[in-house]
Amino acid sequence: MLPSFMTPPASTSYKLANATVPVTLAPELASLPTKEGLVACDILVRDGQIAELLPAGSTVDPDLPVTDLRQGMVWPCFADMHTHLDKGHIWDRKPNPDGTFMGALDAVMADRMANWSAADVAARMGFSITTAYNHGTRLIRTHLDSIAPQHRISFEVFSALREEWKGRVDLQAVALFPLDMMVDQAFYADLVSTVKTHGGLLGGVTRMGPDLEAQLEQLFRTAADEGLDIDLHVDETDDKEVLTLKAIAEAKLRLGFEGAVTVGHCCSLARQDEDVAKATIDVVARAGLSVVSLPMCNMYLQDRYAGRTPRWRGVTLFKELTAAGVATAVSSDNTRDPFYAYGDLDPVEVFREAVRILHLDHPLDEAARVITKSPAAILGRPDVGMIATGQPADLVLFSARRWSEFLSRPQMDRIVLRSGAALERQLPDYRELDTIIGA
Image 1: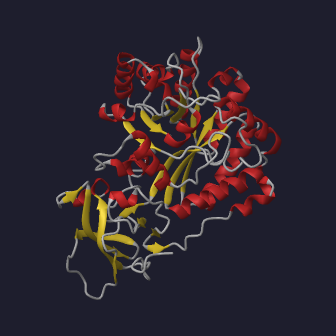
Image 2: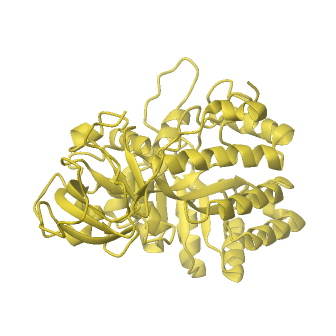
Image 3: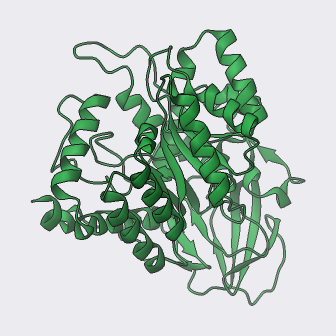
């Protein structure tokens, strides 16, 4: 139930009065006084666009309807830059027996071979996008399992859903496959063709081995020849001897690759000796890689051994990478599947847990960027994840006024605005999946 003052605006032209905004997401307000990176302001919306950002209490058109937020926070809509929409919601059908990484791999493989028809993938993927949209997400990148012939099915489903959701949620897709599969030239050529046809990215999973350098060279040369960007799953392990991250950065520099390269997870970096980690971070920064951390999934999977309490949090060296100038963000990753049994594609949950797991607090001044402007910029969409004049009023209104309030409750009473109009938020019922997953 919404607080009495949280009445959604009735039109697409109005003033949001007495709002609290993370100033890092609204640079136009940087000259105003802040506390913990939060600034008080009024937001004028005309015909669904942000017309002006003003100090709180400013006098404007007296005929303009006013919604007094009573210091409630206003954020831009979110960007979720690393998800797995094709795997989502299969847990009830194929759970992970022991919660381990290998258990997840085996469970997903078995479910994919047995159940992943176009209808199955479309139903689960659509359910996930609907959920994310109702939480306030505007931009999603998903990795798609790309083992023949699954890559064709998943990309075709993805393209259809991208068109269906156009204007509400912008979708990007990455082909996910073990890089050693590139030795099958027929498969690899077909995969690259599929990715190009559907406007996707090249991805993959890097593994330590004597062929890694050749695999990376082939991947980078293919991406350069075809005009594709790259998004890789990297070093998702607690084994300190595994560090393909450095090899990726060195390959990008050596080959002069000019496209965007994103790397996700990078867990083993946090297990390295300080000098090794610093050297890797330095080359990652020089190479211009972007790093996305998946704190909930990584804490769930990493350092999980039967009967033993985990000794570390599973995440990468997020603060050190950021300090070195590396573009960093956090994201949802898996949702109710063998790699992560929980989650709801809610960036507010991701943010709340990331603050706790990665210690993004004290101060919190810049923290809001990690699910908004930072992932959007990495995905090539600097128009998303910011509050700025001239932009659509794609905003999320919260009753929470301060960080202590925002981070202490799930914020399910939020109001999502798209082009200034309030959504009738309705999270889909899990029962909608019963015919696909089984009641």
